[in-house]
Length: 249
Image (cartoon, rainbow, N blue to C red; front, side, top):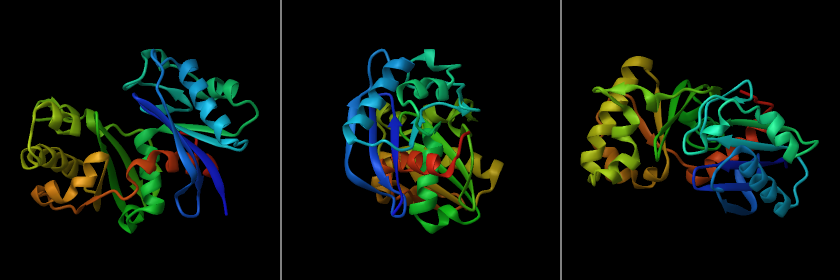
């Protein structure tokens, strides 16, 4: 069996677990610690290091951020402190995890990788777009299960407004929409994505995917739309996979 450790850094919590890479399952319990306030790079990195110390793990560590990460440098900061922008994450986490093999990637990209390996086979067949619907809309482009990193479909304009401001699950809650009402908004966003990229499959992750039966039937685009299977495990599993595979976007 092959193990690796994944950490998923979010706006409200930092979560980590040891992952069995053969099955995509956690080995032992997941640990979650509240994201520090302010969520500056060193404060968050120390929380991540604490999670690994609690697990007694001394091997490679993969980490996700709600950010664009290019050449292991943070280029954006969604739901974490703006001081992350420009941070060299290898230098940052290298100080908190000395001597470890590390990689850092976007959280939606990590979740997409996990789905491609351990979710529906359609996620690793041809062209698939993975979308995670939460506070915003994260995206991961997959070709036969291989990742094209740092896409930001949630920031595309749909009907004159940024897509994630209308079609994220946070927008549903903010505007008090029923599933059918919200599905119409999501359908518009998916229709625009379909016109631009023509994927073979859309895979929808995030907590809203658990209620797919309530809104999925109201999606009317031509491309098949399926719910993600790994749910809240996806970010951690994808991070662990990325460091084991040597992925460093």
